[in-house]
Image (cartoon, rainbow, N blue to C red):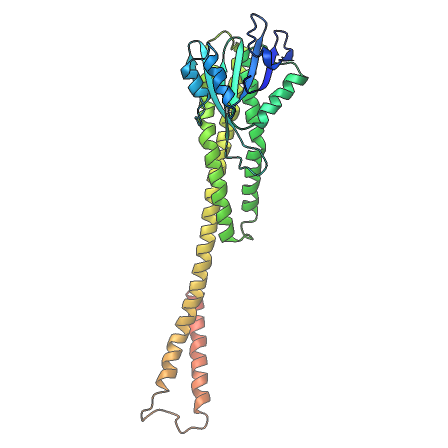
Amino acid sequence: MPAILYAYHVTRTGRAVKLDPENYTLRPEKNGFVWLHFDRKDPATETFFEKDDSIDMVVSQNLCADDSRPRTIMHDGDILLNLRGVNLHEGSEPEDMIGIRFFVQDNRVVSIEKRTLKATGDIVERLQKRATPLTPGGFIAGFANALIDRMAPTITNLNEQVDELEEKIDQIDADKSRGNLSELRRDAIMLRRYLAPQRDALNTLSQQQVSYITADNQLRIREAADQATRVTEELEAIRERCAIVKDQLTDMRAEEMNRNMMILSVVAAIFLPLGLISGMFGINVGGMPWTEAANGFWWVTAMICIIGFVQLIIFKILKWI
């Protein structure tokens, strides 16, 4: 028995009937379509594809490939479709996207995934609780939209993290925040790397002229492509905002360092002539003034203070401090 996770027969009235494992070979004629969803990790899956006459070697290799970018391929009147969704499992990174592959025919949809997608559970719930699309094209459109809907919380979370960094940029630890920004940019780039071709794959799918993709299906698929475009643009905006915040942090750090260097330079400029004066009065040669005067030390101290005060006034006038 093949490793079928879900098997449903969607009738032409929109009613989804769950199939028993032994009925997985059902191919309805003019009565809707069948959806079979396989577990890629089970060896029985490849055995099923090898024995199915309607699935040739090209299709089997594509469905069982370890990794593949999102794309749409027409194959002898059937459609091969690769999509991806965010990884929402606990302890996983969303940008570690999970691939799902479809083989779409006029009366059957075969899908396969190596790791479970939350969107797949959403589709099963819809099949059990509400009216379903009447064609394979409508089913794929619903699946594509479910994948995009599941991405929304991840994109919102990334936006909120960037918002928080922008709002508290004057209060945050620059070194720690630069690390957070780099991680956010990496997440956005990784997500965009798969979403951009997914948008193209959906646009290509919406243009296919086959009987099981109606005009209404094409509109819904195009809507999913538009949503993928919107998410891609948001990810691009997140990446640019991260770059702007990082530049601001770098400017703040540079400004702080310049301010500190200015203070050190002013202090050095003040004490340089004073050190020269005190050094000259410390040499042991004849002719030094006030060597025998009782208040000589205080006169020298007063002279150094006056010179330092005059230097501060000059620096203030020159706007060096």
